[in-house]
Image 1 (cartoon, one colour):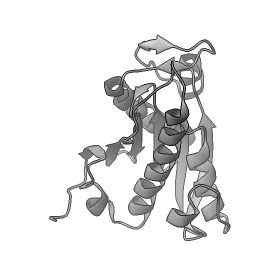
Image 2 (cartoon, rainbow, N blue to C red):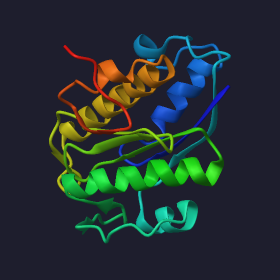
Image 3 (tube, helix red, strand yellow):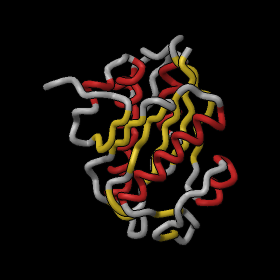
Image 4 (cartoon, rainbow, N blue to C red):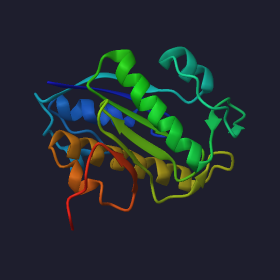
Length: 185
């Protein structure tokens, strides 16, 4: 059975929750059209963590992330899009290693389109949303970015489980892919 753990910021733990629902034989509310109940008996969620702050990253995941470009009034970290990619990779790798999972998923978004990373120690895929939003000036795009981030993380994970990452890494929303070669179009 494949074991997965998530460390999430802008997706608020929904990625782990949706994977858990599918793995438990029921449909979730945000990813049912992507996962259905297809993961039942194939996947186990070790942990699904919502970690919006630097102190959470340091204390829970044991990582030393870069200083945030901004911090919200509530203490949430906010990075530029480039740093979001770096931090999502740190989060995915650390949650996988810390929990002993086979696969880690990390998500974070501050100013820009955010970042989603799937990491298994050999394969690392980083994706983004198409929605530019600013955590410091919240509006309806924040929730739109979150929903798209959840769906893209679930698409990545399902492709990983189904052995079809080669097909997904060709998408324009995948910005990095190490350890996987895209299928020709």
